[in-house]
Length: 588
Image (cartoon, rainbow, N blue to C red; front, side, top):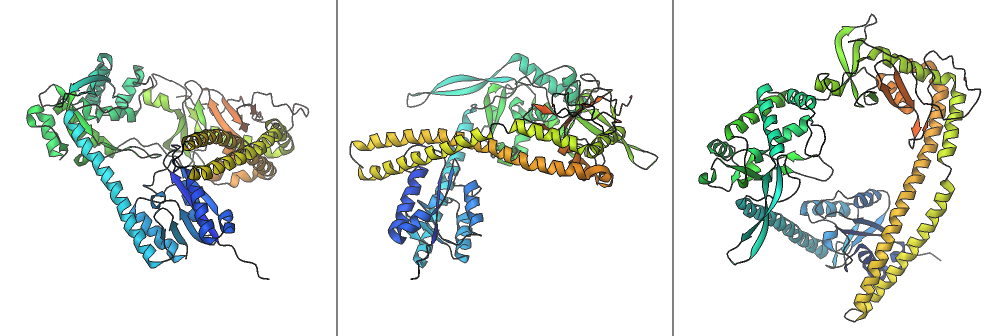
């Protein structure tokens, strides 16, 4: 007898955040599963794959589980993707249209149970596109409404919240509207000490015309930011380019008009006293650097706060910043130095970077030194650490790495000893992991049973009681899942450590003299496999080797070690973990 082939259905659910209301992810999944059972069979419903994203907007397809689902659809023969509602997939018609076209080309249907749309029929496909148009219209309407609100707020010159700029703090004010209601708002209030520092930064930049020299001046004077940290070029530039400090005078008005900002203040409002409020200045996206928008997209008005930098001076500073942009500071890159990123100054703990010269050694190698970045930025006033001879230091480090091959058995024994210490609690973790998975499974079964009961109890007194129970179980499940993730991460680290230890063992036995034939990139990779960091104290380089959990460090053999182990086979890892030879000293 021929067995029935089961179609592979997929359930996708998404929610921006958990609310405990009827459209939680658990409820979406259960309703999709019931739909599949009703229309295609219980076996298909039970076998359905589930992908869920919580805490992600429908405005983008950049969601981890959605991307995993689409990747799996290339490997698994999906019959259909089922969602509770159309906008669970996307509110963007362009993204949605491309998705439907892609699924259609691969004969994967798309079903939305709320709207009763099914792309397996021509009418279903037509209705799907119409509905997606309305979804995008709603999204764009919301965006337009936000911009309209921003326009209205800009007319008031209020501070809308967030981290206040250096020199100001937020002050609450009250307004009585035409309908007699009292509304609270905020404005910026000067902090004298901070605003004096802002003026000093503008003056010093005007004097030097250089962000680097301004940075040096602030470091030498030990000036700190609003949050108590040392200034950087980026922090200085952020202050210099912020129009909040510009006094609203005639020069300011002319500059803003020339640059076609969306100006919501009349010329008469530029009284030579108040400052400028610029809204919609930056584009902020999760996981990406903040970008400044073109001035013609700014929404600008005269603020309620007092300005501090005259318009002509602020405009001149912007011109100087423009000139600096062409010669903007870029992190130096070296194609010969091996220790960039792992070499630290022993005095101030900052990175030491390679500085190449125009000279060459007798063998044709570029001569370079490592210098402390704090020393460089402060012109030796904050840190005066002696430079290190880069060619010599790199060569000595390579010698240490090469020596590992001569004592691979001893190094492997020490690595194994550390592995045992690190992995000692793994069995206990795995037992707890199994228990947690069972608790999560039981918790989900209880929630599903309550969801079914909720459907039968709609409109009764029991409805609220069931919803409260679902909320409690959901919270409990979140705690369990968080602990599960923590344990899985710990065990994964152990698994990765197993692989890493095996690779290092093999590398130790094969490295020997081969490293001399490596490219610069391969030498860097080899060094980083064994070396966590190197600290230069002006005379000696302290080399901290293979490291895990901040506890176990392996002692590097001192320069000139012949490969014999002086500890008579002792497996102890209690040694200092550094070489203390005078590596690469370079007098200035």
